[in-house]
Length: 178
Image 1 (cartoon, rainbow, N blue to C red):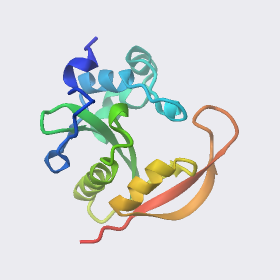
Image 2 (tube, rainbow, N blue to C red; image 1 turned 180 degrees about the vertical axis):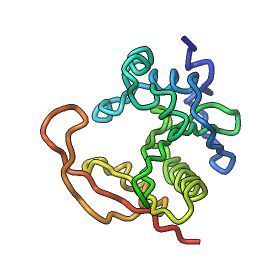
Image 3 (cartoon, helix red, strand yellow; image 1 turned 90 degrees about the vertical axis):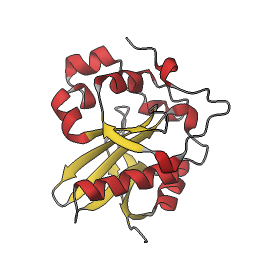
């Protein structure tokens, strides 16, 4: 197992150059790192299971076919993994699933990284609407998505990520302004 700390710059002073981001295929070494990321409450629901379980059960990027077809790794100028994106096809819509390395959350990087993900989705699937879903209590993410060019278009209940009662989500659609 790869130690993810050897791939990451010191978070006490590190701020990636968001104009130098690249989105590349999500490789298994990236997946191992994602499974090591630990989000603090109330974001702990976004922690992935351990890599061995993901592979054994074929969960999300633990399925090599799904990983190849839908997932991307977001790398900084040093080629360090700072985020991931899923480009989930839904007819004429590409739904983004995404995450930012926990030590970088809340530092103002979200809008430019999310915008880069949305623009990559438009390149991959020209003409598709780009959207995402976000829990309505996740105000930090909603602010980042709005700054990136997303607008709330609907609110509905979806099954809880933790297995409890259904929870309210916003659907947000990318409306690029050039």
